[in-house]
Length: 400
Image (cartoon, rainbow, N blue to C red; front, side):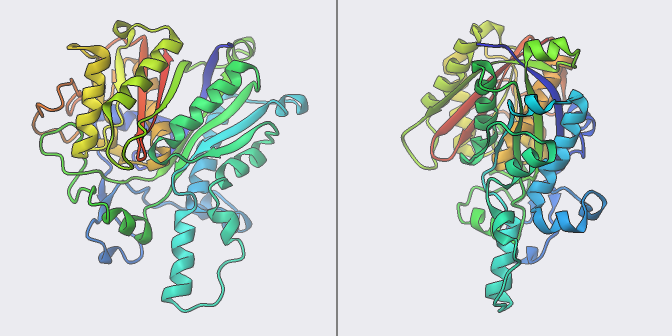
């Protein structure tokens, strides 16, 4: 097993248009959840979310590119540019054959789907945009990232609902660690904040009308966000030899299945994922100084995750926070954005808070870093993602 370094990171989300803005907002406990603005929003009963406001695609892409890129792909390409620039990544033709992409998404080109259905069914048109299929396919972001950066190794998309980007990053980690590849762009992208996307989620009755308050006794549901985060995973020796900045080391990954209910989580599956990541990393429970929780703000998820954490760590678990309280739930992209908070904890010693916390819940007996960021030295940390269908993925990272 080869060591795996993170040498670059990029993001677009409601908190910021890059990593620096995002981490500053997390450290300040800033909440980006607010009123939504898009076509037919007045027909929704849930009208809040963490939207990337004032997104000007014409300032970033040509007219020909815009015709091909769904909003989620635009986020991914923008985040990847930042990540590649930070990593100082320059590949020879031979090196491009051993570099690839693994991206996560839950909905694919959801805004494209929404626009096409509206055109055909509501507006009565008999034709849709000729690039509708290339825009909406789940693999679009991975393909465009590979093309934009000339990466000719393995490139694929993982779609496991809200664990998609954690599964994607885990696959990228394993590819490098096993020697299959040397460099991978990985993370997730999502843009489902549109009428059709939110109308479908309203049917589940898990959405909050007034805010995301993970682990709080007053919590009443999740709040959706949008955006992307892309990271450069690289063989440690290669990164070290070229003097690349190393943000953190990926040291463990595990994935499990509850094999139980399509929507209700099982604490055992989450606990096994955390234990598996720690076992691969060789980390005892006392070595973990921070956990970025899945923490959706729903009654069932938060209670189940808190129980799983107590199963693994006993009566004195490490500090835990859910940054979804600030940037919303980015579905398939959320784990990638949350990994930035893990890097901040390891590199800068700043633990992002769980904002909006009003009252402790006895069913969630954890230290959720309520409302205000905390300073602490963290040598190792976990990032959790637990999806509908009982699909669990946990990453373990170590400070450099």
